[in-house]
Structure formats: C-alpha cells, structure tokens
Length: 385
Image (tube, rainbow, N blue to C red; front, side):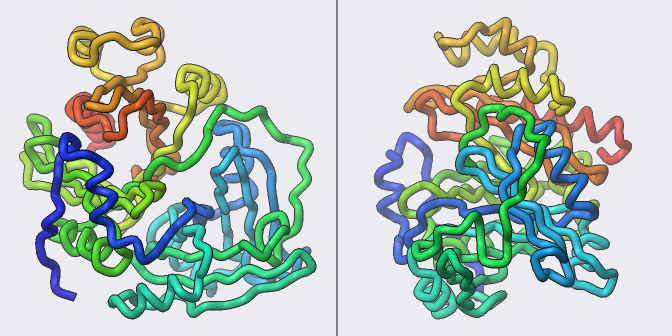
C-alpha cells in the first residue's frame, strides 16, 4: 500500500462532530477490550501494577488451567483490563519478543460485536492477518477472536464476547488473591500512542484511515511539538464514535536525539509508547500513586508562573496541582489536567499518562514544550539526548 498524505488534517475549531462524520465507520467498536503486555515475569509485574497503580486481580491462565507454554495474569480497574503474559520456555516466540523489545505492549484488543465481519472487512482493505477468526468455548459461552498486524510487532485483536458471561476469556479461571490494594481512580483508556520511524507516520495514518475507517482528528507538526533541541510530529487517528484514539508519532529533525528516537533505539523498533488512562479525580489518583511509589516526570520550575494566564479559571487549586506536578491545558471545549510517569521499565520505553478531562477533547498542546523539556532532562541524565 503506497502512503499518501491524508486530506482530513484538521484543527479542533473545525468541530469534532464533523471529524467523526469523516470516519468511514464500517468497523464499529465498543471500546478497548484489553491490552496485553509481554513481560519477563508476569507474577512480579502483576504485583507492581496492583500495588502501585491500584489494579485488582481478575483472571489467570497457566499450567493449572492447561496452558503449557505461557502464563497470563489479568488485572482490572473499572473499564481497564491489563493482561500480563510470560513465556514458560526459551524457544517460545514470546521469549523472542521480550528479548528484542523488553517488557512491552504486544496486543491492543478492540471490543466489537462481530469479530468475523471486522476481520473480513479489514482484510479486504489490505490488512495483514495475525489471527484468523477462531471460536473459543467453555461453560460460560463462546468468544470469537481475530487479529491483524499493525506497526512493528504490535497487533490488534478483534474480540466478540456478546455470547460470553465468563470472567475474561475461555481458558482463564478466576484469580483470587488476598492482596488487592485499593483502586487509584483509573476509569478507562483515553488513548494509546504509537511511535514509528521517521517517514512512517503518514503510512500508518493512512493504514488506520483506509484499512480501519478511522479519521484524522488532529495533526501536530514540528512547530507544535518542539524544544530548543528536539521535535516530533504526530497524527491522531480516531474511530467513528471517538472511543478509540491512536496518536501516531514520528521523530523530526532536531539538534539532538528526540524521545521518539530514544524509544525506537531501546525498543528496537516501532511500538506503543504510552497508555493514557482517564480519571475523574486526578488529584486523588496522582496522590495515591505517588504514595505507592509511582514516579512522575518533573515539570520545569517556571511552568506554573504563566499557566493560570494561559488556561484561565479552573476548579482545582493551582498550588496543589503544582505540588503534585499536574499540568493544565485548555481548548474550545474546556480544559484538561494531565501528568506523565517516568518509564515503568528499565528500558526507557513504556510509560503512562494520567488524564482528567473537564470538557476538553484535545491532547494538551499547550503543555508540549514543558513536557518535552522534562523528558529531555531525563534523557540527559541517562546520557541518551
């Protein structure tokens, strides 16, 4: 498939309803079903995400349930489901994935009403198959799954579960645990960001437009996302109902190595850089996560000197936000609050964004410079800038 520039590059003042209308919504989606990470030690990773992020035990698959090659722990917090999977043998393909990329996101699973039709439609439009439709059954009913390849080694699974009442999927059993820390207020996945090589952003934006029927919600160029030293470009792709949003980032030419280039170097290829998770009370969420050991990026000291002039009146106490390192931005619809963790792996790759939307449906453009300066400071300490 030859990449061509998208015609639906727009700004927010165009009107979100018109943008969603531009999505060729032949592939209706109900939301994100789950996200699966391949990790070196799923048991220990599960303990981290439960303790630090407030996820709860949900389901398990392993030797005890008949899975001979891998172990998976499923965690839930409100509408978010994380699956942490570890191989049991060195010759398993999952082991190859972890050796190359470290712990990282393999599967972004999309909840659909008809997995077979979803698969057939995207294949007809040029997708590359990862998993042909398969029906999995147990005493709780049946689930249909099918999948396609996307950027790098990342895949999308279509999950149809309208005829299933089990805990997660066939092959999983309920995971009972005495250790379940209280939740931290995380609600759902707001968006997930993919990093691709220089020159590949348009190709993958075109993929989501032509193959999956998405529309280009907004485009940021190197003038929007830059500092003195580095820059990147991004296109945000959304499905027809706006429940799935995938920003696609590529590096731009700068004086030093950008965060996207650092990611590509250490992940050894394109992949999902971060998961943005929504909360209704970011002060509570961040306060809880800090107490549990989650580390966040440090916001430059002068950021809060002018933020009130830029965003206007907000309901939150600005001094409290400053103390927690929470940033604020405003668009035509309202404002948002956001903060970014440091990488949650030893490789400087995967991290999380915590976001609270107070009407705003944008992505914090006014915070980009401060955010990138924070990331550059981290890169400088790592010697990778």
